[in-house]
Each structure stands twice: as structure tokens, then as C-alpha cells.
Image 1: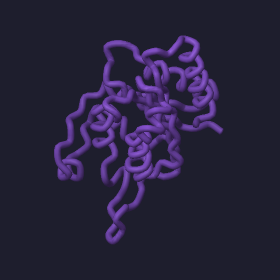
Image 2 (image 1 turned 45 degrees about the horizontal axis):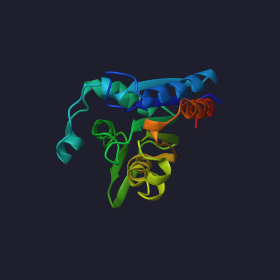
Image 3 (image 1 turned 120 degrees about the vertical axis):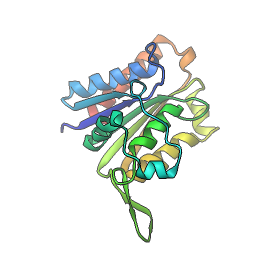
Length: 195
């Protein structure tokens, strides 16, 4: 069955192509090959300010530069978020983007007497694809993939995405061409399956 898929490409550097860009391309190609409707947003190409207070987050209007991105999040049935691991976490640009678009009244609603509120983005699934220099097994087991788990539970899960799956691609600086192509084939297959 055809799905509406949004790919959020979160590599902050738009001066040249990186592994994240290729991952997005292969996922996109697989999804389109199966007839899924796909939108791709390169977060680094958007201009938007940082939020600096809770009041700003709750009361200021969403920047017009992010209106289409927020609409696409509401439109999608499956979200794919791709970014490199920087200092053990998502790049600041990705965090700033999520803070802007996942606003109260859209991503969730406050409910009196209910500390978790009401999720606004239910009936959607997600996949987080993260590239990193260290081996993924070290990040997953030694560091417990803490920042990715936080993103999955405290951000995407909090607003309603479920299930949230992950693909951790480690050792990117020393990765062979053969291994890189294996990952591309996996992402192409995930795109075809809208997973």
C-alpha cells in the first residue's frame, strides 16, 4: 500500500555532498520505485531563528520559512530523519528545527490534569538514520545510544510517532566502498517498504 513519506535531511553542511545525502537519495529512490509519495526537505537550506525561551516557543508564530516543513510533517504517514552524530548527539541545526516545527497546538496539546498532554502526530511511524565516525556497536552498547533514545522517546514518541526505528551507520571515515554500497542497498529496500 502506498504511503506518504517525508525525508528530513539533517546534515548542516550544504557545501558538498556527504554520506547523509546519499542515504537520503537511496531511501528516496527505493520509496519512489514502490509508488510511495515522497517529499524531501534539506533542513540546512532553510533559514530560521533559534528559539530562546519557552514563551517564544509557545506564543510566537512559526517562521514562514518553516510553514511548508511543518505542513509536510502533518501530511506524512512515515517520517525519515537523517543526520550525522556530532558530539554524541544530533547537530544543533536539527534540534533547532525540531524545536521550531514541533510546537504546541500542532505536535501536541496541553491537557489540564494530564502532564503528558495529547499527542498531535499519532498514526505515523518514523525511522532515524544516523551516521557516525565510531563503530555503531560502541555507540549502541558503550554509550547506550543515549541521544538517539532520547530523540525517539522524548521528542518523536512524545508527539505520537510509533514505532520509531533506527539505523545506525558507524565507522564512516574508514568504510569501504563495498560496505557503503551495502548500506545504500539496505536503505533502498527500507524505502521500498516504507520502513
